[in-house]
Image 1 (cartoon, rainbow over the protein chains, first blue to last red):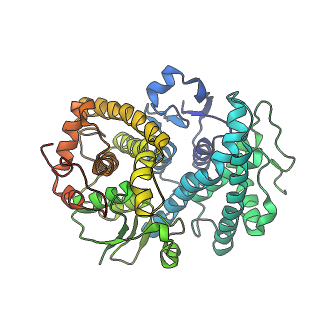
Image 2: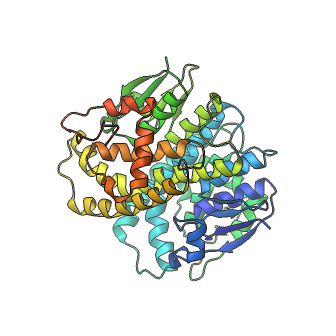
Image 3: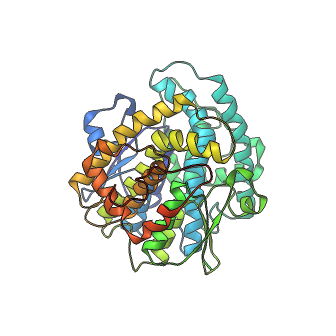
Length: 222
Length: 222
């Protein structure tokens, strides 16, 4: 059976879950408490991070970009990284935008402080980090709104990994009640569209001990 | 003409330069002082970072992973991301290891403090950051040595983007005199092999104002 080591709030694991579901590839989830640094897990991924995929053919693939590129090559029926060279370059630029820049500017501050610290039992959020995260999130929501207004999907005319990367970070932050959707109507409309996809359902059903998501989190008409 | 916006010490730009040279694709370099945040450059890459490639066909590609994946798809004669699915997954895992983890643990501390601050005129290096960077570098050199001992090249039997990603970070740090090559004989031997390639020559000839590299920097028998 295909197996994905994950953490429910990890945007990088959420992205892979969405890709697997969009490609109709069945898989099982295994919760990996990365802060416990389990030796058997470090053996298969020396960074100690999720996601890691064990595919049906026995291949073990670590790191979310490597996994998504692998899935698009091994299961090409539903391509998710664009069709032309130009489209593929734009999708990959945006995936890096969310996984590197958005993560650096926003996710690590807000999610790191509020959820990771709680799950790992590492004390209270640092208010300075939260302030930085909120200020950056507003700018990013405006960029997201700009893309959503100019294009059908974030990477262009086709739904792609760019949408899943963005939606993974935003859904994890939304779970923690951190997203102000009033900043951009276009961004909100884009998120409502992606959130309504069947691939998103298991993610909206996720619960984490000690954290109650806001009422609109799983609401498709938020 | 193919054009690469770069900074001489940027490991991400060095990686793209190596890929272009290995694929025998001629290009011109354009120095982009990213800290000046030039509006025309932000227009083509809103992150404001190098590298950005303008290809002969007019395509503009931002972000080093997107550029390297593009080059391997557009110019496949000399493949650099592995041949089998398993090889490709391993090469991409290692590229992420160096570009994300090594960069986070080492490069941003040592290069960020010593070179970026000097080039952007932003004051003295922070000794705390340097200490963290040196401690992490030692562990990474051991991992690099372990890989170099077990395999012909870092990603397996073929020279690949994994080698170029690693060599880009290490050569930028070596320029600043930060690498203790005595930690691992296997890592040093691997670096001597990659450094001897014709694609590396222009990188070893780079000079930056106000910084003198150590005597061994451009020496192939260091």
